[in-house]
Length: 467
Ligand SMILES: Cc1ncc(COP(=O)(O)O)c(C=O)c1O
Image (spheres, rainbow, N blue to C red):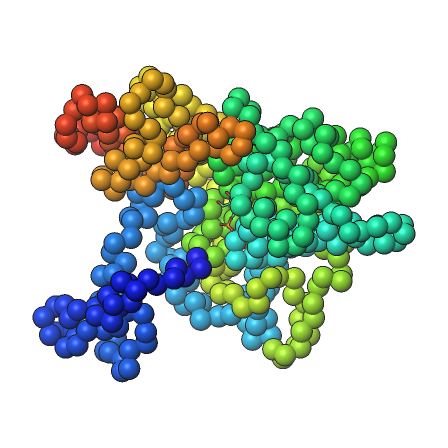
């Protein structure tokens, strides 16, 4: 986040700094908050101070708002700590990490059914946003080259995607000067369709964006239909428009839970895919992946070769330095779980999410927008009429520690406000029951039929469900 402007009151407060706590055990003087202290402090004091401050943060285990991994196994925690000091970009110094990176790109290329005869090409990124920008830049470049070669103008590129995209798509359009042709949502349709895409494409369209697991509802765009449309357009009009699939959250669930669903490189117009390693790839924050259908897809002009780290190295990234530990953690997960393990986890997540969705639907208080149909994401709106909103509910649930975002859908469905629950690995069936009970309690308090939260007592014979 861009740091906020510190107002005068804050400045006065900042001069006061951290007042001495723990008696005089750690500090004898206050520590400034907005300027670097003149002298340092012992390591244990700095540790205690920062640790205490961040204890105000939410509990990651109760955070159902984020898709990002909050728990990994102790063995991989150890592996991460052992490699946390490696800069991934320094391939000359850490060649084996680069070898592992290549292996993961190949594994993902195969997972996404890239044609076997091609060389699997891709890169690790800091997250899906960087992966999407790089994928779209490649398509913009290819389009420009094609236009140049045909002696045509190349000053009016456009990109077509739905209002259901993550903000990084809008960022790409703005940062890289491409007209965004945004397909609105409708109150009864939360994804794009082949027809709405057809209305907006032309020979200046650099790419169509399609989502496997939308940020807003967890739904999926009809990628197969869009690919069929673009194949037909290519044959009839000669416009070769690629699809970039944003599989940030779906790319590590659908190949395992619904392998028969065609959304990936099995579809001819799908030329690039991104997935977040740090979402259902089950790695901590700081890892995305971009995979191209073919070696020739990222234009050679966009690959930079640098020699200042000791060898001639190709790079296709926006950022240069990046930790190597998360790449190793991804490799660990792929070896540790295998296809069978990832399938088991995906099925388990879906089962728990569907269980939660069913309880919410059965309560009669919610209308489900997504009952974890494809991904373990539950989105629901309140059934009218009620004297409170999903925003009140989200706020009330914070009192019990749950973090459930409430938000309105994008235009033209902005009249709909929903709650989203992203089910992750640590969210057991028992937690689903606890959350459900807390939601019901919160609703009743807001309705005025109950005054305080009563934590339900369960039978002493009841065991934990397998998670
Ligand atoms: C569909 C989708 N695309 C892209 C992103 C951005 O991903 P990242 O946070 O890894 O940059 C998100 C994040 O939630 C997402 O849900």
